[in-house]
Length: 164
Image (cartoon, rainbow, N blue to C red):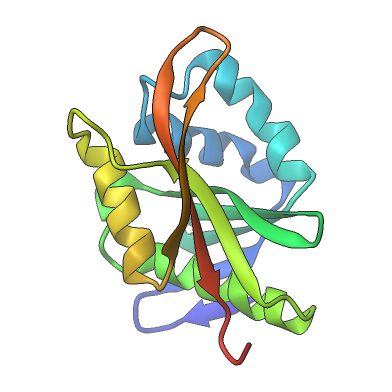
């Protein structure tokens, strides 16, 4: 648990009862990407990962999940309530994750996201800007295609953890 008294934010471990609040945050992030079908996968994704939520006045305003694959920790989800972005919520969640990873001896953290888009897509441009502002660097770029044939640019970002 971590309490930031200045902003009245409280970081804690995820509970199953948090799922509805998390789904609402995700649905507002990119409604054209996160369809009802995609939202159905969230409980599985989050419950089998290390997940933290951040509250303000007993309301969940953000969350992050991290899983490890082949000894490499990866952010699965990171979402912040659109109405209060820019208040350091995402940064606080990442700091919590980084502290946990350092305790277990991890040296870095990765995230996969949509890469630089053409035509310009503001929400993902903001996502990339955020990750770069907290120390992530582009490790790899590529193109992906989903099961409906839609192609997009893809980036893997990596951050070296403090002291490693």
